[in-house]
Image (cartoon, rainbow, N blue to C red; front, side, top):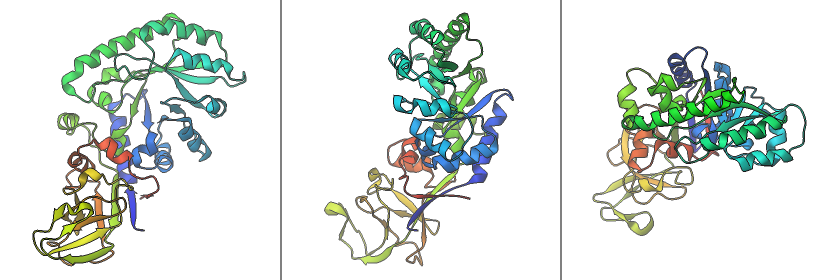
Length: 372
């Protein structure tokens, strides 16, 4: 293989157990596996979590949900994103719950053929993020529609915190929590007492046990990555998560370039000495950010090799002048599953001026994932 991604089963298990420790025994744990399980592989990562005993899986689309069902994943699934009408029948028959985030979407469900079982839905409430979800003053109207339609079963209600990753903005989280509690009161007043209530993702789960409600939704934390440096600095002594993913390639070619020669497109970088370079068979198509041109780093023989010139679509040039005995075919570490590594996902993301979320979810899904 020219390039591959490794995912540590041991670290997945560690992260799962760490979050189980900080939630109550009767609190459900949802693993958010949307976007190809944050770049880790939707199917294999879900298999591992099902074996560990996860309660729920969260995906973005009915396409992802259908993929899991066809691969015999049996745990309950909630589609967190928008669901198209053509997939609703499959959802009804396969224990897949969908998110209802506006009245228009709910009215569209009236067109669905009446049959058993009822479609399970979770009502998304906009408590202040002003993204997906209905407002508090719309809940009564939504509940009236649901009560009249025996084809719909209100399984859950949830919200999403806008500022939980920032410990300095917890007042906003409190305001959102109070609005969510008001939404719950409206549901209960209308006879909906047994809905699954959930609000906290990774940050909220770590920061505030009071906001766990009936279920927590853990995404980035299950992959062993902190949602923000602020959360890491405050809580790394209390919860020990470990990155699961590493990304590797090989040295495809080695050559010597004289001093003063340009490298890559537009020859933007000139060699300042006689330079030995290695060509790596990966580029921005594979998920190595183009913003790492002229400044990125990879590891060869545990030593840092700087990216030279512009990152190409399928190739990368690095400086190996100071690394001894590099050979064609040697392994190269692009992302390492150690927090203290100079090429940890967090450090690579910081250098490329993006978030860890974006970096790992944009790893090309065609790259082979090896769970070990």
